[in-house]
Image (cartoon, rainbow, N blue to C red):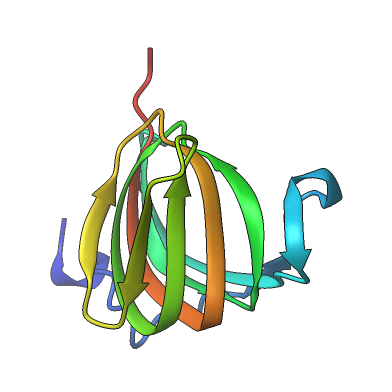
Length: 120
């Protein structure tokens, strides 16, 4: 590997992927999302990039472990038991595989993510 293999998010020419959760997963709003997946590992288990989400709330079911750093906006992550955590710019956290609940964007949100998909 050489220095040219380093992925600098600020210089990556990644094409944006625009999408919405499936209609049956949306609880409120129109949560359009944009993904800039800047890196995929050769083994296919790790990826990293930038995610942006618009106001709305939808069902989440994590099959992967995800490190997140909120860089803009406000979201609320809720578990199936009703517990909630408000996430703001500057917050850094890991969502473990197996987490189920909802993600709600209150103010347009932008996060840096690193995902690890554990093969079973």
